[in-house]
Length: 304
Image (tube, rainbow, N blue to C red; front, side, top):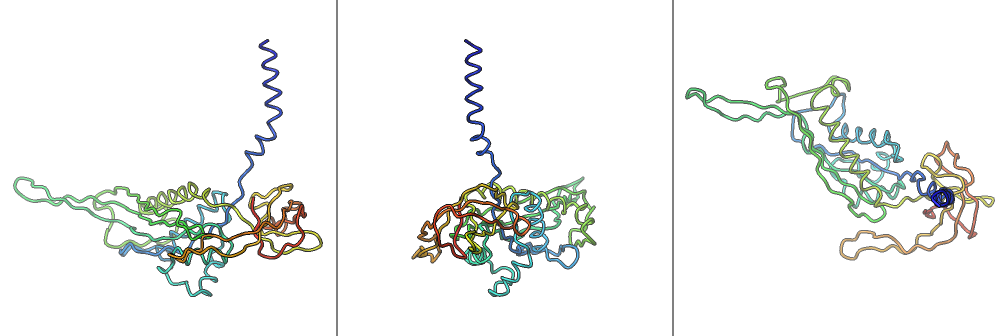
């Protein structure tokens, strides 16, 4: 009897294994744009090279997101070019509304921006009395604080507003807390403030990971030719041959009458497509066969 039950369980497991494997499929990579962070640290501490503190932190976040392998991160020059075109290149004027607007133009799902609120070294002094004489006892520490904002570019909704702050104590008198500069990346990485900044950035990226599932993956139709539909997502984004997607055409925008934010649109399903080649453009695009529907246009939205 026991052998029969084990055999039955094995048969059931084998039957559901393909479904289980499908459920474990790697999620499609969402597109992310990281705007340059503002520097509100109000200190004399600088980055290495000609970068500002905000630019340096932004670059660290981009590197961490790319190395995670979970996202397609928009190149900085592509983002800056569009910011200049929209007259939004000045630091400190990125808002959830403008980030959503630029994100939509870039075709990204998530916008990351914010400010560096603290950066560098500081000294805290307390007074004690030794044999009637007041003596200053100093404690030095390295600190990195980052104000983070995540925005769903489709709706302008703020997904997260969080402050990350990391500190490490330094030996008293080991660092000039008034001004610090770094010769190069190695010099920065080996410094105490470089290490706390790295820890803060890693926490920022973890917060992005924790909230990215709240935004749905999308792609866009590039063109439709000779019975094939080409989309701007391929193997680099985890799109696999054989996957079937639905295609929608955006209709009337739904705009909040109080805030003016776009809350989505009334979309019309126009058909479905199946991926046949996910290697177009080195994996950045895919060619799909038409499963249903007949007229597909540039800009139509592709969804899971």
